[in-house]
Image 1: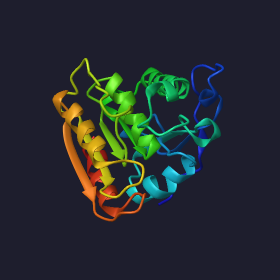
Image 2: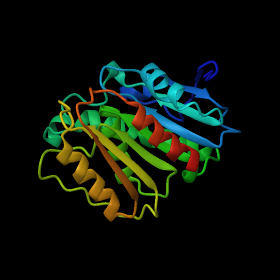
Image 3: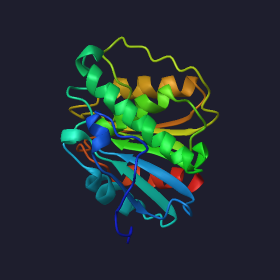
Image 4: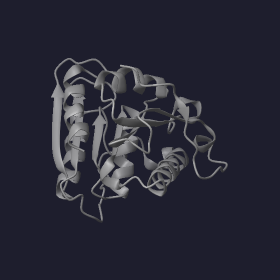
Amino acid sequence: MDQGIPRTFKLLVTTDNPHLLRPVVHFGAPLVSARAVVVLIHGRGQSPDYMREFFAERLDCTDVAYVAPTAADNTWYPYSFLSPLTDNHRGLENTLQCMSVLQDTLLDQGIAPGQIIWCGFSQGACVVSQFVSLNPHRWGGLIALTGGLIGPQGTTWPITGDFDGMPAYFTTSESDPHVPEDRVRDTASVFARAGASVSVEFFLGRPHEINNAEINRSKFIVASC
């Protein structure tokens, strides 16, 4: 699929937040004519190129715009998403601010929440899960590929709002070295209680990657937006 020449997407502000100083890549359909906008959040040690090659190009939706920010030093926060929140506090604070600025930029350009789908892989899936939990709207969807809400065992994630049937898709492998099944189940339950239309898949023996079943399910969510 020809996603077009990548273009730089301008954020509204520049601060000492290192993520806001990194490029945001826009490819696919122009924002002004796109049926939907998929925000792509890469994993640790990756870049927007990973999400473009292994998600967007396989999705093959020509009427969709993709917006992909870049993490400083290719990581959104330093430690495991299961670590104490104090360990990741500064990195996570910067990351959530970056997501908030990106959200506001899209909304200010006239893109409705129902047109925006938040999608991430691995660390990026944890980022979008956390951000959307703190910003409950009837978004176009949430796609968390091998990830979940952030915090150690025993963390609670109260959501003060209603997702009003927003599709939310969560995955992992039963043997994934980074994202255990229990956290994905807990994350799915949190979103279901807040009114999301939740689907969960666990893949036996799947490596830490995005598989074809996840692409097919994601394509359905994007097509329904």
